[in-house]
Amino acid sequence: MHPVPNPDHRAYEPTGETVRGADAIRGALLESARRLFEQTFSAKPTAYGYAPGRVNLIGEHIDYSGGFVLPIAIERQTIVVGDLIAEPRLDVVSTARPDEIVRIPLSGLSPGIVKGWSRYVAGVVALSASAAAPENRGFRLAIASDVPLGAGLSSSAALEVATAMCIHALCSPDTTPDLAKLVRLCRRAEHEYAGVPCGIMDQYISANARRGTALLIDCHSQSHREVPIADEVEIVIADSGVKHELADGEYAKRRAACERVLAAIRAAVGARESLRHCSLADLAAASPDPVDARCARHAITECARTLAAATALERRDWNTAGKLMGESHRSLRDDYRVSCTELDVLAEIMSAIPGVFGARMTGGGFGGCVIALTDRGRAQAVCDELAKENRSPLVFATSPASGAGFGRI
Image (tube, rainbow, N blue to C red; front, side, top):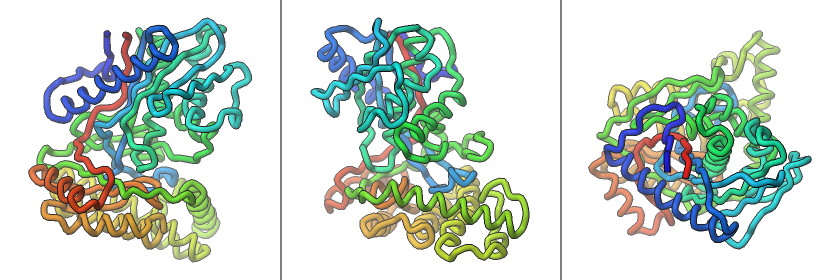
């Protein structure tokens, strides 16, 4: 194998606990995907792509309002292995459903045709310029992942970015991928083929993450700066074990509410590029519908909290960072109304454990995970306490991991 672990060709340093953990996970997943590919297609894969899941430290539900977000990549990740075939067709299989082989003609592939989990893969393939390079060729892909589904850790973005990386490895292995273009392609695939109007954050961090840092992403300019996360702290992630079915529809409703408020602000006080560029005074002047106003108030105040949290983390002011996380959770609960009882209880329990600086829900809401900023020396004890009390079906600690990459087999 000839890996290119970071597609911008930065050196991959096999030192430190995070890298060893991520590297070991990647190796195990690669072997699982390779074995499934060989069993399914009676052939050997020739390339692979990988991409991590993510957790957002703070800055929730504001990426589509042009806001600031502060995610890290987690050590859990998705691997896609594959090869080219002589027919314009996509064949894909996953270790999660090893007996389900999805076969999709590439000619005429368009939104709405593919249903189920494979639409994330099909969307990336359909939109990828690289996919059109080998005329009348197609792809066989096998997938393995340990990013939990439905937990708000961006399993869909990890799958999209890993697929894009694998396609790049198959079609253009000697070139460096344009990460900005790749991120936009993957987000478009989720919009058009999965029907989820997500912002840019998930695909952006999965592709661009750096070990030992969070990325403060400006979702308006689609640029970022690195925020070092010192080894003194670690992130504990606990799955609430619930996923309410209303999440996707409610997500779209809240995004629409933010768009209505922005239009009202523009009409009342003049041009504003996004809610990120608005103030609470602007919101008051617009006098929008009260329910819509609460959504916009969350977006405006969350932008300020995210910038303050980035500064606190850079200064190693863990108490302030934790306090801001708690404020974020309350805003998501009370103004944006995307929390639920299970998340609220879990966040309260985690916040009270010694060594935890702060905790909040993360992801789309209505279920999923709670994250906590913890003292590194106490992280395992926090995990053990939650597991002992059966507070979470899945709890683990992570440090900021590296982003996506690809390789030849």
